[in-house]
Image (cartoon, rainbow, N blue to C red; front, top):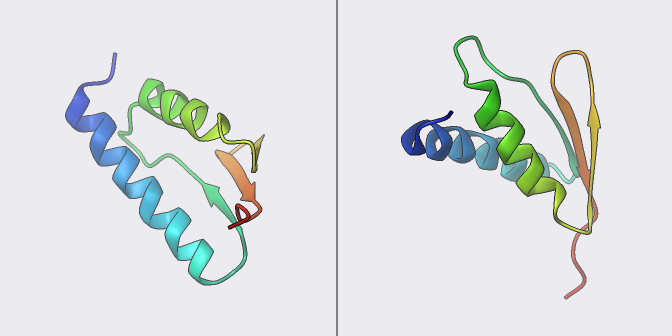
Length: 73
């Protein structure tokens, strides 16, 4: 089971990658676990991201391709 600090650190790292992709207006990012990452924490965070209606997640051999459309304002 992932420790809270591991989960929070991983969530922050993923958020930074998503924000960078959003700034590039590509609206997609390929998330890949790094060596030593807790895969249970990854699965939990990917599940949390997948709860969003405007997000599409595709499992790849290396990780997950996350695509989204901006929420209407």
